[in-house]
Length: 317
Ligand SMILES: *[C@@H]1O[C@H](CO)[C@@H](O)[C@H](O)[C@H]1NC(C)=O
Ligand SMILES: *[C@@H]1O[C@H](CO)[C@@H](O)[C@H](O)[C@H]1NC(C)=O
Ligand SMILES: *[C@@H]1O[C@H](CO)[C@@H](O)[C@H](O)[C@H]1NC(C)=O
Ligand SMILES: *[C@@H]1O[C@H](CO)[C@@H](O)[C@H](O)[C@H]1NC(C)=O
Ligand SMILES: *[C@@H]1O[C@H](CO)[C@@H](O)[C@H](O)[C@H]1NC(C)=O
Ligand SMILES: *[C@@H]1O[C@H](CO)[C@@H](O)[C@H](O)[C@H]1NC(C)=O
Ligand SMILES: *[C@@H]1O[C@H](CO)[C@@H](O)[C@H](O)[C@H]1NC(C)=O
Image 1 (cartoon, rainbow, N blue to C red):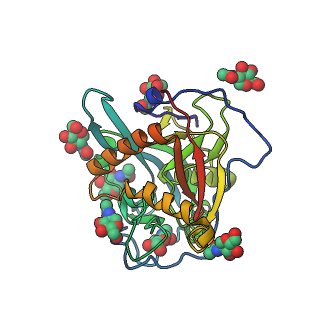
Image 2 (image 1 turned 45 degrees about the horizontal axis):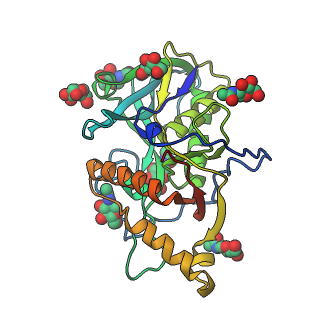
Image 3 (image 1 turned 60 degrees about the horizontal axis):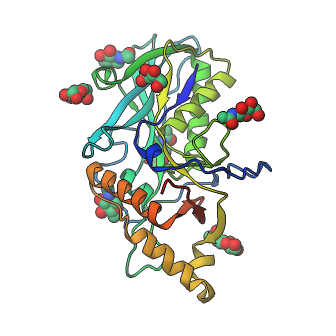
């Protein structure tokens, strides 16, 4: 299958391709950290929409008979379309998922990976008066549930059969999904690169619904499945362009040391501007504010693997 990453937004207009000093010593991109188990989410974090309301409470995935033939579907739909003055027209973000249907039972299922507490909470933390480090509600997880809502996916998006697999392949994939879900616990909105060109260094990869779909397709291929798609898929990503990131440290290193008080205050102030918001519209405005602020400050504090990095941002000014 041919995947093209394509971002449909105005950001490129704002950002200048500064000649980057690319250092390719294998350190980049920073590997996404795996955990040995998923902790319970803090009770401070509240979901606007409950996570995975119709999925099995314990994330169980039904066992398929090996004799079964399971069809695999690629599912994609726009999350939202938002117009911001005449400046950018459409800001198009796609949501990706995978569908399965059993030829023996006729049952079908949808599997997707998304934020427990909505996108805003995964992108910006809460700066709380009573807690010194910015407080993140940034878990993301896999949700497997009965049914495929054909209309939802096909009307403005894509519902395409891409493979047939055996019951054993499905069961092996299900085991992998549960391990992946237990060890990959947080959502990352941003993809950070040195520039928009094809030879850019990728400093940080996002960890989101489309990455989950990619991982699952790779796993199915490893298990011997043949995947094929008629059309090219464009995955939306939210990019930042920066020079080489500088490692700062984790919460206790930064917020627990009087010597780093200035840095701690700076990070709190930075994130205070971008509080998580209730609605997608508010989130989009916050995103636009973030870009404006970045243009002014040429600096961004990225939280990745529960650690902070400073990004020297690049701009058109
Ligand atoms: C983000 O988290 C806060 C605090 O838990 C919560 O009040 C808010 O509803 C969450 N935002 C969304 C969009 O769910
Ligand atoms: C993934 O983890 C979440 C959070 O614990 C859980 O609700 C969900 O059921 C799990 N999904 C799968 C497929 O294991
Ligand atoms: C999934 O099952 C529902 C209910 O039987 C059916 O309406 C729908 O067409 C099925 N979708 C796919 C992609 O198999
Ligand atoms: C598809 O888009 C149209 C026009 O924007 C909208 O009215 C409709 O509700 C959308 N359908 C689905 C299933 O989201
Ligand atoms: C990218 O790298 C390749 C191989 O080094 C080179 O041929 C190509 O011109 C480069 N492209 C750009 C846009 O720099
Ligand atoms: C994907 O992007 C390419 C290049 O911009 C475009 O030609 C194509 O129509 C897009 N495909 C879909 C399915 O949106
Ligand atoms: C934070 O970083 C310090 C030193 O860099 C390390 O010793 C400590 O274990 C880390 N704490 C957590 C919770 O990861």
